[in-house]
Length: 106
Image 1: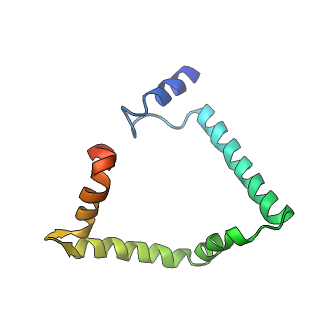
Image 2 (image 1 turned 180 degrees about the vertical axis):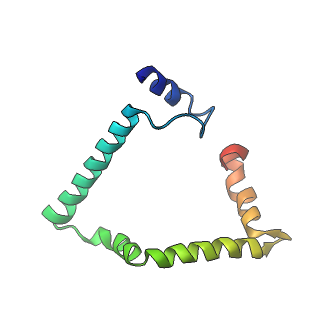
Image 3 (image 1 turned 120 degrees about the horizontal axis):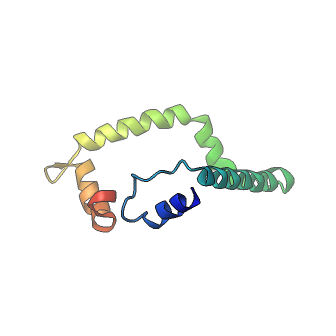
């Protein structure tokens, strides 16, 4: 199982979305990193009292449904809005992402 996990990690560039992420090693590692991050947040917020950096997360958490609806509206507007005769969504993909991410990942 470890060999399969290492094999998947070594071939990330060739097969970016096809290989199996759901190995036991990846689950344990991800759970550990999540608990570490939660511990750091707990230490900074509750024990040290640094709460200024959490304001954007509080605003987003209180308006999550609004953000969800607006993201759908923006996606549809990018299709309707034309830039040089092509939809803005296509223009953004071709001019901003395709050049550095490539056709597979862009």
